[in-house]
Amino acid sequence: MNATNAFWTRKYQRHIAEMIGICYRYVSEREVAEDLAHDAFLRAMERADTLRVTESFGHWLTRITINTAVDYLREKGRMTEVRTEQYLSVLPDVDEDLSPETMLEAIRQADFTREEILEAVAQLPVHHRTVLNLYVFDGLNHRQIAETLGISPNTSKSHLMRARKELQIILFQKSQHKHTPLMTFFAPLFGIDAAFDRYCRSRLDGLGLPPQHPLAASDIQGAAATKLPLRVRFHAFRAPLAVGLGTAAVGAVLLPVMLRPPQPVPPVAPPSVPTAAIAAPPSTDTTAEVELPETSVETVAPTPARTATPSSNPEAEPSSDDLPDSAAAPPPVVVKKVLRHNNRTVVIKDSNR
Figure 1: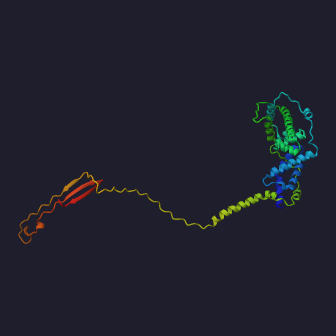
Figure 2: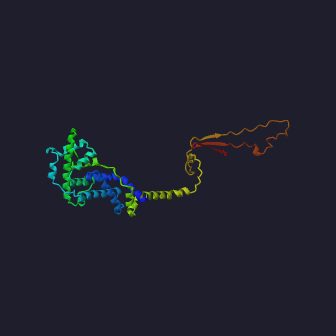
Figure 3: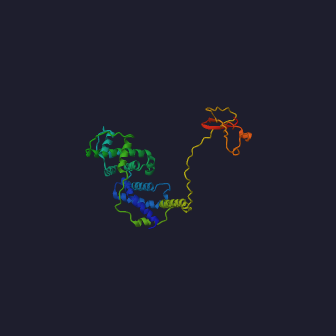
């Protein structure tokens, strides 16, 4: 199996159940809905060139499925209108004084299943059911509905209003058979119609019916045998392409880092020990007058002269008359000044005194 066949096979397995569910909301017949879903998928393969690059594949496939179901109803002549009075005459009678809020609360508390909602929708006339499906479940506005069905926007609004009323009556009658007590009053914030649409949409959200007779693989391969347009090829291979480009980008960033030689590790310097800053002593100006407190003067007394003693040997020791004048003179007096300035002791010797 080549890449093209594998692409369409994956898309079929992923979307076919949802496609059958969409068709079943329009035709209310299981076998017909499955045939329409298969026709829509083969039509999508043939019209692959209509897929825009910026469009989601699932959204594009849903649009083709809706158009296939609407074309089927139009070709079979089932889109003809019926008189509302004739249709409402066959609906069960309800109390005219019953407010829409009370009906909506009864419907909400009945807690209908998905199958019960589908059964109620199937009881609507085809043209009412089609507009209800397009507006409530598929999200089209009245201008788009008018272009799809070939009617005016006002006609689309009229069909939607009647479809809502008819569906509310059917569901309310079903809720009475369930004998569910009405406990509280449900007050919608955005109107009764919007609240009713949200309730129905929540019950049928994600509707999918698996195929009872899956499409043969040979049919998919035969339809995909032709060369696909570039847009579909981009959608088919964009994931591998993105992975490849991402891998190349990461490799371009990491390869220079891996091939870079290891850088030498610089030596770690030992931690520096913070040293205390030593303040320099304040400089003293020689011209400034400095007060010197606590000044003490120490006077050293002169050593007394040695007295000559008589000796038996007069030549051993000279007499004082034989000494020179400098030796006979007494030594000078030395004065020490002890000064204390800025917590420092300064000793000054003065030999002149």
